[in-house]
Length: 184
Ligand code: ZN
Image (cartoon, rainbow, N blue to C red; front, side):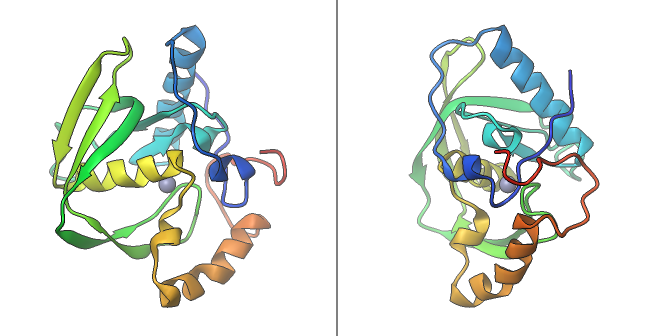
């Protein structure tokens, strides 16, 4: 296993939509193991493949360090697709390993219904209306080339403009490995 450098806002791969997987081979399994190691090293709750430089349609989460979710099993989602959103929305603060130092309140649907595949490419459905639904929407956004900051209102977008520019130019202190500017 290896800790991979995390892509940051400004890296082009984070603005490209993920590509579906048709076969889970040894390379993909290594990628997934590396994603878990990279996420845990950075104290993240979730991670999408393009955050470690891969175009594959994969995201993971591990909420076992979150109070109240210790028994929630770490999960891998392959070729995920959110097919239903609740009408009810809620506001929660979010952060992102690719947007270090930025936290903002984001409004999203409370509940979701997610179709995804496991490592054997068997189909599954997951429905949630709690923290999982929030993490899944955030990571799913990454695979759609979207950041949580894209979802802020005009005032919120104005607030994050300068911090985002600092991330692009790497003028931020980060305690985990990141990509060099212009390499992704
Ligand atoms: Zn993120």
